[in-house]
Amino acid sequence: MSIQDIIEGKKQWRAHVARVKALPPDYRIVYREMQRYLFKVGPVDLADGRLLAEIVDFFAQGAAAGKPVLHLVGTDVAAFCDDLIKDSPTHADLYQESLRKETR
Image 1 (cartoon, rainbow, N blue to C red):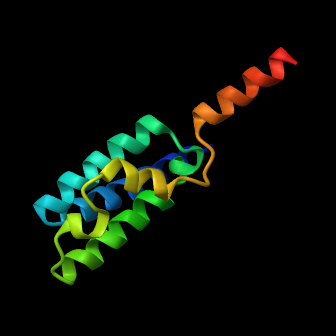
Image 2: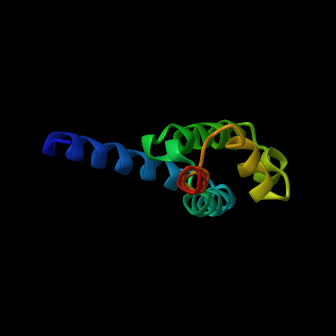
């Protein structure tokens, strides 16, 4: 990874954060909880930023339509997140797989 890649990544992250800040307060609260949950659960492809950007797009559309955020995600935000990443490998999955290989 070059310095230019790092700089570009920072620019993209700052633009993403600006988009989150533009959301209504209730959407921002739910987004931050989703982000915190996803960082803990650790889907492997979270680092590429597409999932978080897609969530912001989804929220921006919902906010523009005047829908309450919990009408979009439901009252169990963790279950909504789990459904988003159900087919994605997590870091825990990779770790468990490596342990299985070691015991064989």
